[in-house]
Length: 150
Image (cartoon, rainbow, N blue to C red):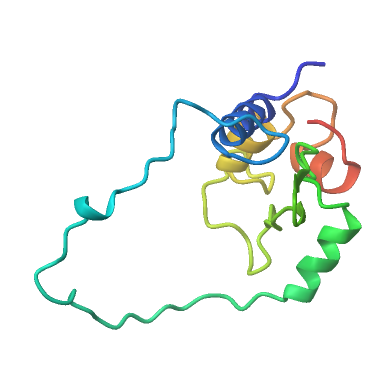
C-alpha cells in the first residue's frame, strides 16, 4: 500500500530540514550557507528601539504529561514514526491530533469527527467521504480506535 500523501510530504520536509542543519550525522547544505557579519558592517540604530507591553493568553500545559507520553512512545512520531536524535538526546514534540481543549473549530465536511485539515494534510483521506477506503469503518474510528490506515 503506498504511503499517504501527507506522510510523503512529511518525509520530504524532514529531509529538507535535516539537510539545512549542521548536525553530526546529517549533511549540511551549501544552498543555505551560514554567513557572519563582520563587526565593521553592523549598523547602530538611531537611539534605543521603541518598546511596548503585550499580553498573551495561552493554555497552560501539563509538562509532566507530555514528558511521560514522549517516553512511552520512545520519542518518535505516532503518525510517521520519525525519531530525531541529537547530541543532547532524542528530540520530539507532543502535538494534539485531537485537541485537549475541546472539539476542533475547523470544518468537518463529512461530519465524522476529523477536521478537513487533518484529513488533507495528515491522514491523506478524503474530507468529503467519511469512509475513504469503503471498508465500513469511518476514517475517524480507524484512526482513533483501530489504529488502521483509513
